[in-house]
Image (cartoon, rainbow, N blue to C red; front, side, top):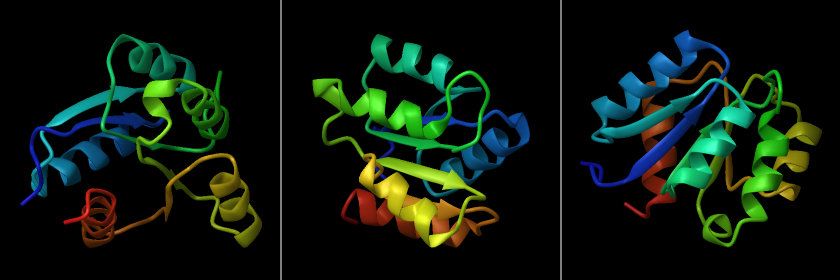
Length: 126
C-alpha cells in the first residue's frame, strides 16, 4: 500500500484527466492530492507548499508542463522531487527532451491504473 502521507500535485488542463489521476492515485493509497489546471496555477501552489511528487501534462495553456518542470527545478525544494510527465507526447525525442529538462519519469496517455501504480512505486522505492 502507498504512503498516504505523500503530497501529490496533479497538473492537467483536462478536469476529466485530473479526476482519473486522482481516482487512480486514491485507489492505490495516495490520498493527499492537490489539483491545478495549468502550469501557472501549479507553480503558485508549489510555492505555497512543497509536494512529494508532481504529475504534469505537457500541453497546457498559459504554462506547459515542460516550462513548469524547468521552473520547479530552479527552486531548491524541488531539486529532487519526482516530476512525472503524463502526456500524449510519446515520441522518443519528446521523452528525451522532457528528461533533459528535468522530469524524473514519463507516462504516455492512455495509461492503465497498473502503470500509474508501478510508476509511483518506483518513484517512492516500494
